[in-house]
Image 1: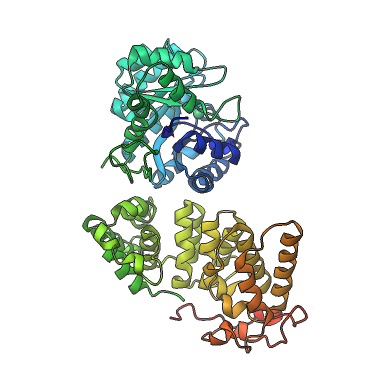
Image 2: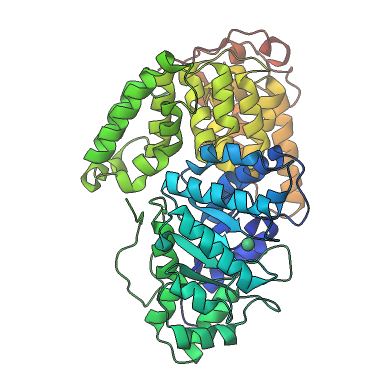
Length: 286
Length: 272
Ligand SMILES: [Zn+2]
């Protein structure tokens, strides 16, 4: 098995076991970003968010480090719970949390059911990203995806956040064109059944190329697989992409995107038999 | 045991690059000015600095030539961001409520800094106050927090039961006992600790598992009274609580410091 270095730019490790960490490390994963999201069960107070944020800022990085993986996170009020008035006060506490060293973006923000409450939360959090000099991880809705993307792009334009500070995530064949035209980074979640699969990902890479593309497993508590990033790397090699292109998609692109925060700390020796420039400790930005 | 703050500061400044050193000076000045800005709205500027110290004074901020002597240093230097945060806390001199808030809202690194700062700040060791933070850290499974919690402040103020549980937890979670401040004083002649360690060793052996080598170190201390020959006898003897336990050693020894512990005079955390 050829050695790859992998940065999973979107994975919910809170929902995964230590066996997953071990398997990810064996597959080449050396860094990841865990966005805050919906836990599958509604929260009933802001305090529940604070405990969750504490976990993303303390316990998960510790667990990841035990397995040789650098852990960073993105924090936000997720679109689904932006509709619940019991949760929205978390927006007032976010500025304090966005200062933290491990926070490399605001996210996941975006639309779920495209409600006025979601409009408000999205705009407010894009503003916070600007104020904190952070990029934003913007997910595109699962239902009514193309309309949702257009509405998202409108809000992004109004926010004044530069497109290179934004990744649009969970993209597919129907949303790639408009997303690419926006100048934002392009995120693809590779899932066992839904979202993208490795073969479709290869077709997209053939047409679009490897620039500005981020591939993630988005693994969580649902039917998902934390090794999907590795599978895409293997599929790319099998399809004739070079090792340098695989490294660009699976490592250098996420490092470049989240590095814009100035807070990424990676201690990543290149895999044996390959030599990449620098990056022993990388901060990016600033 | 406790490194003086001035030594910590000099050590850190020698290691930091020029940019990070300038940032540190500014942050310490801001923190020293904190009492004049208590009633202003929003997050106090020094607390922002406290949160951001990791990216300002992290490993990337060290000058390579400053690391030259570090490898040979007798005591391995602390994480530079930990030291920066401890210095900021000391300069700001927060009350216990502020310390608790910083810990509660803090990342693991910020929590670690609050714990490391406790012996320097020496807040009143109340169960509802600073001691709660130590107890919280000891409940976690994050070994960096457990280790930071067991500094001189815990050595001076944890009661006998909590302290023994903490020692046992270190052995369970792989925290080296060298992280436990005052081990020689507090373990010496502690028959109950000896019993707990022997039981644990028996449990490991019965399961066919290795007994951590640190366990034997602690057991040797606990089996013998403080007056016996051995490493404990060479201690500085400044901990009256640990000294108040004469005994014959071994599992039958009287409860070392069990009752006196809660009343004893805390050891000065400022001892050299
Ligand atoms: Zn997600």
